[in-house]
Image (cartoon, rainbow, N blue to C red):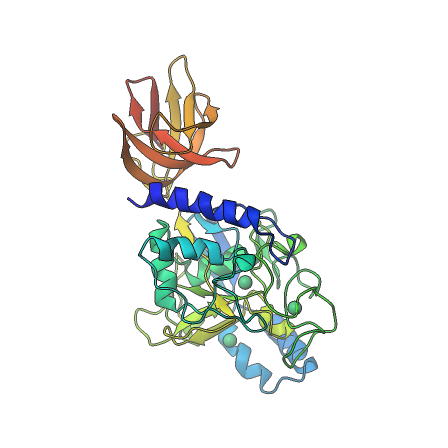
Length: 382
Ligand SMILES: [Ca+2]
Ligand SMILES: [Ca+2]
Ligand SMILES: [Ca+2]
């Protein structure tokens, strides 16, 4: 129901972002998600990976390193269904749109470490939102028609390589490379500095490290800011976690943050690292990334269109219009030929005489398409 408003606010934020160059360099689209296919991966750390993590941690002169990483054991097989995950950490501009819509609470603190004016300063529109609780993260993702990733989905998107079926210690590979992420580098104010200049002493704009993208193409899954995931925390969960689509312990008091941040030593930015967290916590190192189920349903039609599903474009002597809004008066982004498979991101919404869905085309373009118009333009569920 909010999508029309959200789209306009999103465009407004994008305009604001374009008008006010951030201190960093990276440009990014307002909304973008990555498809992660169904399949099994090895979650958690092997004993060898654990030992190497402890060694790297001790090298940074951190105490009780083993105690931080024992909850990554044992490595175990996990299957997840297909899902989408945000390409970027949720930005201040993204989050501000939800606040403006009257749905999300503002962050608890408008400053960031090193940046006295942050959330309300348009120069930081493209930086990750921080000072948000787990509940704020849930509210934001829900408003976008999404949800928080499960801990398993998060780790799969961070370190699983679909081409090889294997996992790496960091998103890009298994060796630390201080130029591929924002961690506690040589300019960092905190202890455990890694001897490299990564360009940022504090938080960086999202997407600042294209060489640090994960195998599926998600940015900043190592470092910059930690990210909330959906599950309750149990240090021993991996000993009894189910194979299929684990969603964490059924009860608990702590949630989980993932990925490490700009103020952490290298060992804490490994993709298997997990840290328990009070869901009411908010701080200058913790943000949001959302996910979305990609239920493809049964092939061959039938069923109904639904968010997270796919549809096939069916047109007769015509092409399907992808528009900037839910109605025929909105501008056309592109035209999709018969047989095009699209992903459904939001909807339905009434517009004029028709019903509209917010979809993503194979080009990556996102926009509104009509569900059914006189049997000439139709979206058929897959
Ligand atoms: Ca840094
Ligand atoms: Ca991150
Ligand atoms: Ca841990």
